[in-house]
Length: 265
Ligand SMILES: [Zn+2]
Image 1 (cartoon, rainbow, N blue to C red):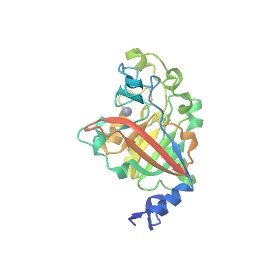
Image 2 (cartoon, rainbow, N blue to C red):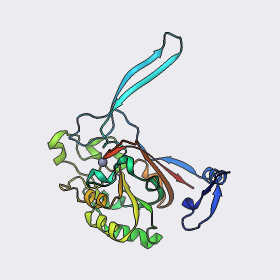
Image 3 (cartoon, helix red, strand yellow):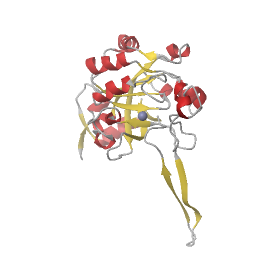
Image 4 (tube, helix red, strand yellow):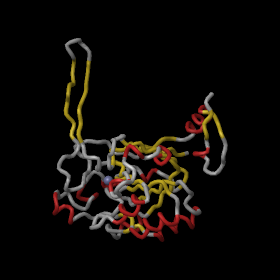
């Protein structure tokens, strides 16, 4: 039997086991889908006009008497639950198809800032928020995927509350109000921790009122990847979840629709 390392589920405990052992471990927990479906309701940036579109190629009974359905779709890379590849804001960094699988999988750290966001829709997730998590759970382990729970997921897909506005175009962009990651925290994470990815339950790693997308710039220049519009973060524990995040493998893509799931005990 093929031997594979189980180390990824047990952090620092370096043991090896068979794929059967891995299946046994996985069967003791459950999978949580962190992905919104793609439909006409999928949330996009106000400036996006070509939102998700599904065309029916065929749906019905064929001349041969059997049922058949097929569709073609079109969608921007960035919208709904999706990946930001580093090249989205950092020239020469990894595109969607170049991100190592090891970076798309790993242990999750969930930082809950829901209480802070209630009184401030424009909240910037701070270094202090991560330090508070570390006081409780210890230093963020190397290779973690850091997920920020703002509580905004409960508004999805209602743009008026989720984005702060349902208005489209430039007027809509000016009215975006939702929390994001403080550039100072992005800088701190790059300098002081070895993380693979960040993710959150809002439309952008920068807050709605950002004009320069500094957090995008800082994280992606360091080849860290981003997951945006992540669903069901309220179902994850603060530690112990394992993430598998597989984007569409668009050659040279700056991002891609993403299927992201978590395993929890
Ligand atoms: Zn994006």
